[in-house]
Image (cartoon, rainbow, N blue to C red; front, side, top):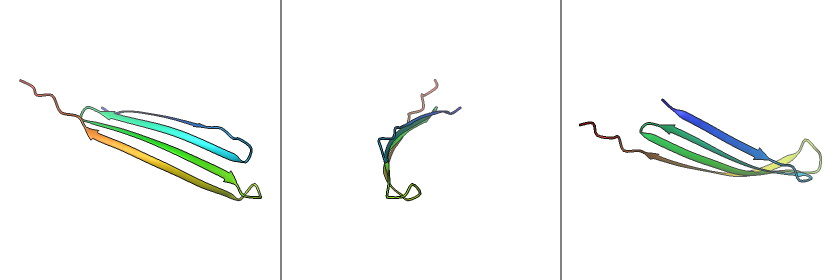
Length: 68
C-alpha cells in the first residue's frame, strides 16, 4: 500500500507570486520526499510573466524486515 500527501502555498505580493510545495510518498520499502520553491512575476502586461523555480527530490529504500 502507498500513502502520499502534498501541500502547497502561494501568496501574491504586488506583481510577484512566491510559492512553496512539499510532497511525501511512503510505501513499505520506499520513501520519497520532494519540495519546490518558485517565483512568478508580471512583466508589464498581465498576460506576460516570468517564472523561475527549483525542485529537489530525495528518495531512499527502507530495509525490508527479516521474517524468522
